[in-house]
Image (cartoon, rainbow over all chains, first blue to last red; front, side, top):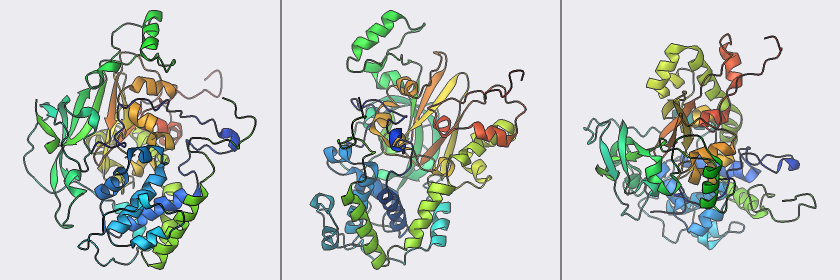
Length: 272
Length: 215
């Protein structure tokens, strides 16, 4: 699905603002990791319940992304995590609909309309202790699979990204759909998120070869090519200003030499 | 924009006072999960402590400083970052498959996750808020030099920008250029110079300011 989370190349979000104007309040929300205690708890609850092994990282991402676009864009980061967590707890049969509905300020929007999949709701092992959790964090969750299949494309091969056709989870961002690129690296066979986010059988893992594909930035975003050598002149600045009427500070010249590298699985690609 | 009168107006960004409904809902959800035996509250504290105090950009700074000081380590890092970084004791979640991309006069690297917030936790900890924000995620790929300028970073035309969009489970760490004037510095001194933002690629590392004019 091309959801609101698929932000690469979208316009209208304004400046990055790495420096906050809120330092007067004694906090620097742009720099701090958590803005409030509930964010710390929502973060830790997500990781701790994830350790129960009832869902994988791709299901978790899909639960966050698969919501109304206007809601995704107006929710804070950890609010989106919380919505995703509630959905998963319900879908995996770990919390009943009534239990979620009884939470303070619960919104029906956040509780998945789909019934919990009974096959998925199996007995849960005991909650990990702090020591067990520390060991799990240190181990991580590698996605590289012991699979020696031959990659279809070699380094240097010209490829084209397939137009997107499926409705489910994917990690092919919209801005490369249909774009031509060059294989920069072949990274082995990794768990395939498009299948992993929707798998019905916990024990069946689908892997696909993962490539790093190199694209010309100017070809991906021709409307912001603004190429041309030489030093920036006053007239060039004027032209750029005219092109970006609502952001008068957009006088920075991009370069046609710049590249964008995207990690893409084999099924996303065809020969170019 | 004036903020001088009062703070009663609504801010439309992230630093408003925490909405009481979320504070209450998360508290209730935690109680429910603890009651059901699905979560151990001590484990929650362990997770928070790990990422707030133990795993953070000082790890990455140590990696960068070692790469600057030790050519063999630099080669190992560029060939197999996961293994090289593990040799310093940094491994685990969101660092399972690490890649290091090196800056030079010819190339400047910049890391983003346009789809969510993928970030190399083992060496940088959790991402700062701006890294997860819509402006950064939308623009880093389409107009990287304009984004860099907002961080006060400008590059010559002859330096090619390479943007790495972390769409899979590969995690990218930028190896910044070693600043001039640090030839005699120890690894520990070098590590002090390395900033988180330089390891994401939005900033350069400035040459150290000389303490004494005759240095």
